[in-house]
Length: 259
Length: 297
Image (tube, rainbow over all chains, first blue to last red; front, side, top):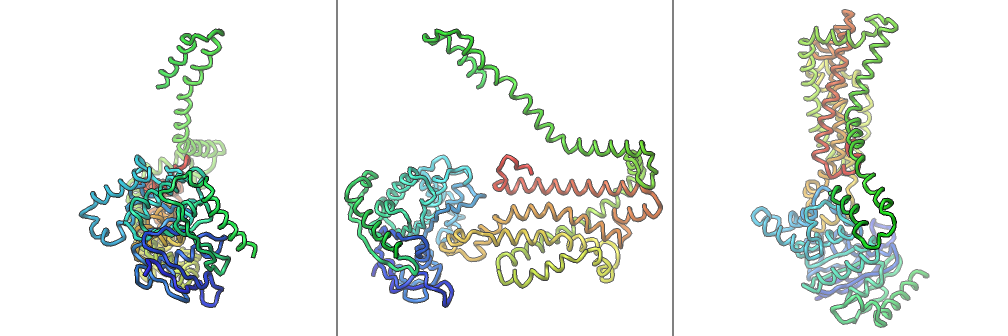
């Protein structure tokens, strides 16, 4: 069985209200990088809530790791468009936050604080934030905050990383830098990633599989495998094969929007 | 640093071979802006620190001039010099009663902090409790507390306890409201991040809710402490034989108006001192929330 499995999943936020997503079935393999694209308000974020168990489906089944999801999972890391760093904590303290909550780190934190701190510092260095460990969030630029936010999502070594438009508020150059950062992190030790985005180039550059969702109620319309060889360099975004993928996806989205 | 740079820039035109034009033009504007920059700055900061004292001093001077100039009788408005004399003469009873007022105020304020935070946490973290309690709380807060003092006197007798309770009842509402607001405005994404890590409600409250509510809490403490003074003095005025409020009542009944004013000034001064204490605590403990250029406010 695949790592994440949706079987005909539907969700209405309150009983009787129109469905946010309808009859979604999909399979994500362990270590796969998938991306979900679609028009605004198509229920992409709803999908994230279902995978992580923050919401229970009104119809169908969600399985993660071979078990049906029945409450918030603890093997997940999340990052959003807003970095949501805690302003009273330094970068390092922000990144350490999951270790204060998730077991087994939580109970080991007292005895192994040094060791965990080293790991967190290594990760911070890894995403290019060396020297900013003891700065507060407001002292960081938007791109740096987002790097820290992704560190926080990864520090407890989750098996599943959920990203909800994490690069949406960044300028084009910073965004491409962060694509590469995420690519490198993932390439190093693959974990399963679900990336929700508006940006088709981002989806094609990073993902193994791209899903296109329809307008509300959200349904999966297209599943497209991205066969570009890995590791992918930024230059790949200027190749014909890349453009072809983006073009096809763009057409599907255009179709969704006009209907 | 700056002097070094100046020397280098000055030296440059002489050394560079293509400095064919007259040197003076290049040289002139360089040192000018550097020297006079520091002194006005220092003066400005001094003015800011001195401003509140100057205003108070100015007020007293104008007050004194008005009293002497128009020959205002002492039983209507005593001049600051007369108030000062009364303060000097009665400094022992003033100290005693001010001590009592400080005690009842701080005791009431302590209850306010505990009850305000607990109830604020309850109201802020549960929409049902919010809906259920708010009308009652607002209703209670609308009652003039001076009208409530006689009831407290019936229950507890005159003196310390009604003063403490009045200080508490008058000051706890802003604390409650602010703590509740701080908790209720938690970003849903942040809550999702924590819940997806398996955090319990208590975890979320401890790691995010309470620290995030701290600036709101401290802002309310500054309001609450001044209100607590109002509460304890009201109660002492109506029903006590101790405290600044009582001192002023008995002074005015014996037409010792300078002493009344001395009492008023002592209350005001205690309020300012307490306010500043909590403003200082706020700046120390919630530095992260005050980082703009006007962070002193």
